[in-house]
Image (cartoon, rainbow, N blue to C red; front, top):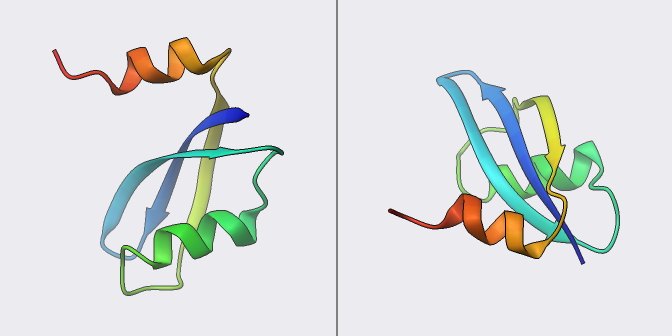
Length: 64
């Protein structure tokens, strides 16, 4: 399993999303995941960061 942090822009502003998968996510897959949460198809992927492992991914998502 691979773990990703994606930053994106849309007409209202900016956002980010954490994704998991067995391969590097395509732009189409990322846009589909974001459009499920928002009512826009106008999404520009700004950056994709791949976490080293599940431990780093979980540490990033942990609320202190």
